[in-house]
Length: 121
Image 1 (cartoon, rainbow, N blue to C red):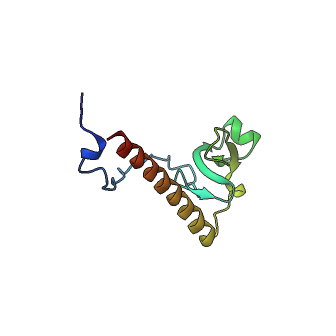
Image 2: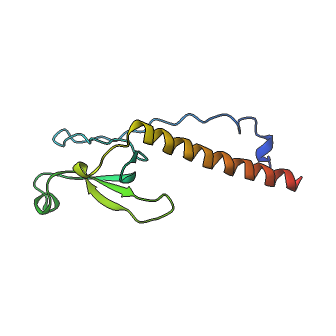
Image 3: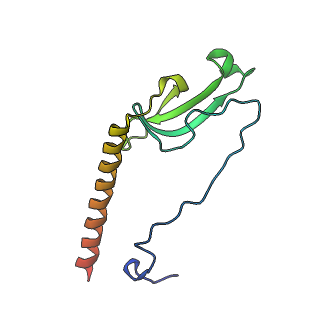
């Protein structure tokens, strides 16, 4: 068991580099228009994606192509399954505002947690 305190960890304040991850998409499928989970859109945050392949029941019932699981609120488990054509990217100014608000939220949370650690001694 590691008894090292978080504050003793030299790498705590260093940003962690994300590890590259990839999935293989069959060559007969169209490439997704939106290829990053967590992408902020006008409809919400892309949480997942699913492909309705040509010749399948889902593609016959709807239409072939990509569907995206979109969460309208990060505080909710509810998601909507939207067709690629139903999703719009945020305007760059809107995206900047959303990202800055998210950063500020997390910085406030970090400051609060550090204050709690200091109070513990």
